[in-house]
Image (cartoon, rainbow, N blue to C red; front, side, top):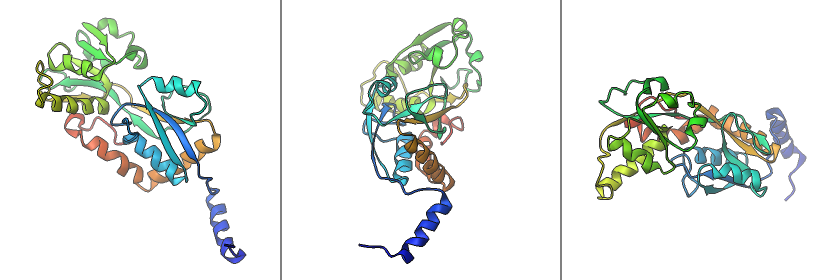
Length: 265
């Protein structure tokens, strides 16, 4: 069907005024880590849903490949069949073109209430404490100088193996992203109710403390046009309040653990 010049002219004027050329719809293959509730195995989550919404606003469809945390960085760098990477930290560089930071993670300390640590605001206050963290946390969190001051320090890949010592009284703090840790605490509590965790009591109240700066998250795309489009479309989501509406429920679910210590977006 032909569109007359009279009808087409207003559309072209609006596009020119916005500076936004019409997007060419594409299927975009992205690789991301299995870190619920940011990304789950089905490609849903706090960050996943924002990425899909922003690229969808640009006219694209996202297909996530979910792999274990850490492997996503290597697989993206090694495999050019992936169009994009979710996500990169501020100091990381990968092939392709980076977006602007668009969301934040918040690492910190998960502690039991009533142990004198519920008001800590720095890693230094964990001096003499038993600390558990994730692999390479000493380097990623920049705490290599503080590690010798801890009474003990262990790094464990399995999330439940990070949390069990806390609830068993063998650790004083778990250093990790607060939202991820809160998610697995709830899962651990469900497992305990089902009789799968007979040696711990994960119902003990816990609190998260943001003892680190928040971590801005970026995406990488091999096509610079897609990176630029994402920046534009995620800015539109933010301006219209849609980004917050997508991300906030994932954090609000765990406010009894996170309090005001974790950003909604």
